[in-house]
Length: 499
Image: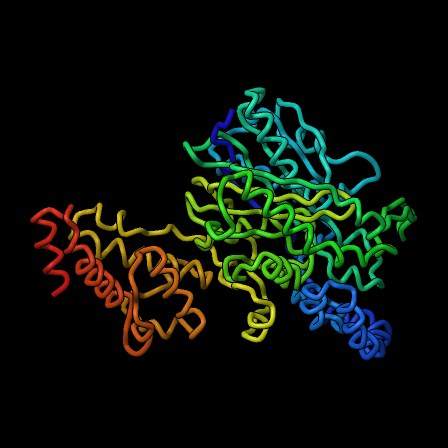
């Protein structure tokens, strides 16, 4: 059996509170002094690491060895009114709604609560009760690979027709489970993600998967039961004695899983349109791309703005990549995750018409230096706008195209700038809204949606939205004049537009 089964809807949910490195520097000045005194010793360890045949890892980690924040610029953490369950509920609710389902339509829910917020089992039953589900719900855990392992389980169950759809919900609350005076806590973030697994169009969905055990990394982390300041029992995570195994095995695991997944799917790495890796550190994305010999621009790295969000990381990367058009329907997507003392997994899928939930709060601290050093794409946080293709534009009557295109361009600007649509004036100069970075992003979005080239100077000077729309329509008319499918009236109208 090989039914087209895959992700139908996707959502993410993050806490409102955003922590920045300077918060920890202010709260723990004595610890910062100790860290600064260790920087020289840390920098000298690079040559030792290179001798251990983990060159890719050591080269990529080198710039971060003296950074106690491990490359994160900010991270999202729970406030007193939030819990893992509240994040899971909001993510699950959006995934259901964007798939145009109701809670009664969901036939099975698989939940990973890493960590659940209490000592004992995960939140599956509690979440099912809060959502008003009438179906079975169970907990599943495979550390940072939990999302992919849940996806494989859902895929297998749907193949047998035991269920018609499955809701997968994954959360990670690391900020409350690490000692604040341990620098490991400064790289831990919180969040949740959810997706509906369902039948898709023919040839879409999961094509191949490769999963291997990561037994070599047992002991990389250790877990302790403590009594917190409120007198309640709590699990604390600490770096274990076998932490070096994460570096020593990283390259082998990513190659084994990704090469195995593409072989199972009957494709090659060169055919993959987009790669989504879990990103527990700022450098992990680069380790994976170098190990596979692929261009890092075919990936996305959100670690600097979310820090380590465990099994939610890969969901967030998929979500933001789809949000800005890095992933489009029918693209070949390879997803890879590595869970310490659990499993490493890779899945190749042909992306479907995936509906997306609301965008989270954009980052508050973005600089050109951060973008360059972290190899990230800040446009992944832009609020989604309705994409406009050449086909959609040419499908409407010629006299309506200018208005439709102007509206689409204004929607993008409004979403990117977090303004109301009515706050923008189509006659105002573009430079009143765009800086150089935003102009390049706007240009890229237009070229992707309409498949035409736009000179960068069209976004500067006295140009406005009305003039830009006229120029784009003129370009489209010239491009489509050569189409053998064009009708005489259509060609005549395009000639007028081009003139």
